[in-house]
Length: 441
Image 1 (cartoon, rainbow, N blue to C red):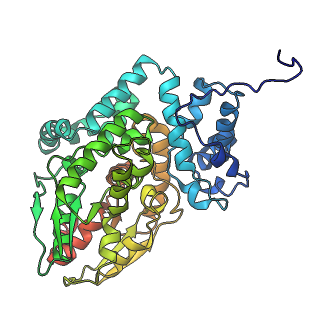
Image 2 (tube, rainbow, N blue to C red; image 1 turned 30 degrees about the horizontal axis):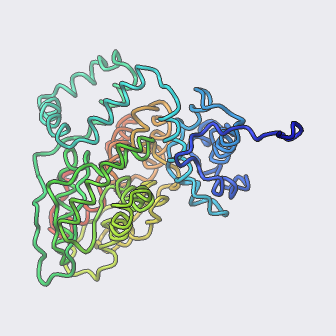
């Protein structure tokens, strides 16, 4: 018979499938170094909307001291998952693994409202499907080219839409002419590497010029570029939002596609995608058929700036006399630890004056689907970043992630700034080709 005086520990509010790691949770010493770089803490000054506050909530739930209810969930929904806290943490707390595990628990154990579920489903079933984005591309381009977008924005009729749909329309980038990336782009001169190019989803359809520029620059620097046409979404949006099972399926498809391509390196040019594929070994750790393959795949993945900065320049650079403000994407600087490499590429362009944006560690408010599901906070962060950029009087802003491109374009336009926003690789491509960037014509 059990001793009645022994108090049994309360059951965890998490299920048994990969709950947030108690070991990582216990690494947090609540020092507060994360507070000045946490976007939501900077906005609201609320302890439970800081990394250490959220870790405390995870600990409470793991010990049965907090239920996964709407109030508890709201603090995790408000997190951008930007990983600035990871860079700032002196104790090495891997907050990324904690927030992804927590969000997966939320999606399994928390019942969202029907409207919220449907909205999230629309996002995931659209933005993770390049084929569906391709169908949307033409009517959206017509919407812009025929002047309907300008007319509707000037009439303020868009204000009649729900706030989240307004946010979606405001983020629509200026769609260029169709410029698909070839399945194989030969290296110029002797081949240095055979690389695979991860095309992305939004990047593949809404920023085709970025992928085309990436292939051209890699080829000019001696890389044979393979872009497997059968590659799927990498699963980044789903991983970062707690949709674990769907993300696993896409990760497996991505691995299959690039294994068939037989490449030495896998190049990414979207920071959110890059941070995801580099974690495939962790994501597929339970899969006996894919665990080792996923780890091998992840070891091959590099951001395009990592690849190019590691190669001695071969192609001549033509001058671009520009004041260039560089924006660090969160999933590049924090999740991947890539900061110096894009700056190295830009500094190699003759005539470029590189400008640093204040509060570089703080997110612009893009963060995957964050600006679609938390538009008020995203707009506040976007405006904060846009005002800091405006103070620099730059000719152009460059960054390494499509989400940041859309967020910065929208935020700068909102404060009346016409500064162009480009991907880092587009500026390098213009220099190598000796062409004038479109925004200067």
